[in-house]
Image (tube, rainbow, N blue to C red; front, side):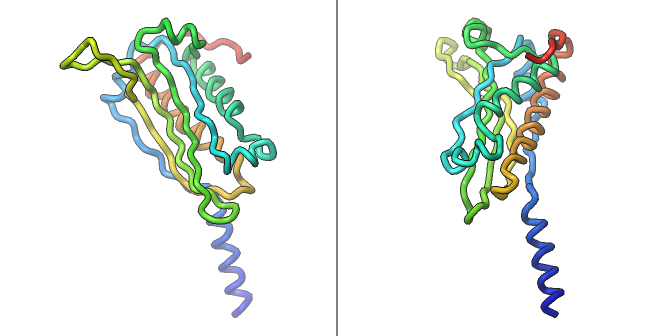
Length: 181
């Protein structure tokens, strides 16, 4: 009996150790806000200190995330705007990636990864008033163990793929992809 109980506990531990997540959906109306964009500037928000202390060991850092996002966008033919190009671009589109984590118990983190496209927009009731607003977003939540921290890259890739699909659905002729730098 003890052996069966031990096997069941081990099986549950294996299942709990895998990354579990649920993606949010984007909508046709939010996709239409991407039409006509020439590219996007990428911003990855700072990682939280509870994860940063492990980032070197697991190759999960803000800089690595930004490089990976930019590479996926370029390979899809979506221009990654430099800061100066972004400032001169209509709407100033900026793709933000945020990885928020909360330690649930020792070595276990709940996460919420959000990818949002912000643009400068004006109010219908007061066109002179402009604000940077989120026009497209998606997110994914789940739980990860410190031993599998590097698997947080996978949900980021999934969400960036959702953005790429949304972008290309309303911008069918992006510039030709260049070789990765």
